[in-house]
Image: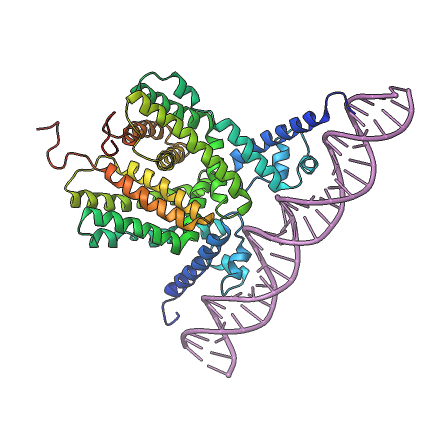
Length: 210
Length: 210
DNA sequence: ACGAGTTCTTGACAGTCGTCCAAAGAATCG
DNA sequence: CGATTCTTTGGACGACTGTCAAGAACTCGT
């Protein structure tokens, strides 16, 4: 047996390969990312991929799942640090803009992979899991927002995620099309418009059940 | 010179080729649609593509633009025929569900191409034009909705399109993942939830300017 | 320092891709 | 009808793909 348990080293290499693959995927997109190109942007040669992964599909699925890990907690700081409803909206919008600026390639990769999952079944489960995670993440923001506003939520989690995802996607597209500042400004405005719509007007006493 | 003007025949062939290409693209997605596969699903051989189009890119761009033509008027009947605000919402939701059922491959192709446009610049302009058309189409529905409700719109066109596009995309993904009925029912619910949010509570007299 | 086990490189393989081209076929004219 | 142009075919090309296997390079307990 090797000194350091070989499982860890194996997994570490896998993660390194997946990291390189994610960089390439974010740059070229799913369609044009060949295993050779992925290996070229890594310290390894193209053959090593099949030593750590059975085939390209397995690598891609691992990429998707690793991508998920960096996503799910992105706005938890906003949730934890905000003390007023209005402050949360601004902080949330700022964080959304920040992640567009810092990680645009990863975001377009996500939308690419989700679109591919409409054609290729092997991506569906992984994409669905990420969608669920993003929905839950969004919902944590909105419920905290409702708490701070002393109001109740007016829309189900899936709907809130859907509409915010729509405008985020829009902003990302605009940002990548060269209209960086306009897209970010518009996103800020849209978030401040949409967040209040997720709350019911009546703060505490709701009609209906006694 | 030929009897019937050859321009028309040339264009007719182009349209036929583009139609075949759109069917194949909707079935396989952008990444896996080769010119040979496109030609196989058409009455022609693979070489003829380069007689009517300079290269694959030109064909794809023509496909995108032809796809746009069938989109832009999809909900104009709803706008024209509805007589009440509530009726319009139901008719709109029905039409959205109908087009998911009838044209799911085309819709997933659209989201695929829009995602590709984040990587490949040559698709950007065409994708942006379609996005604008869809935004205008959505806006015609919402302004008519506001008219029928005797209210004013509360959100700008881009925001309304963004949030509706988000939930539509969600429904399409669910529909293609085997949850047909749940996805359509959810979309109906979401549309009836979101449409009222596009209107200002105050119907006629707004505060502010005299 | 040797040898066994692990890790990585390299080259080859069978396909497929977009593109091009020579030649066959079809259509239309004088 | 022959002649000219337009249309279409199918094969060929070089480049690229995922996959695999043989062997070199490395690691590490002994």
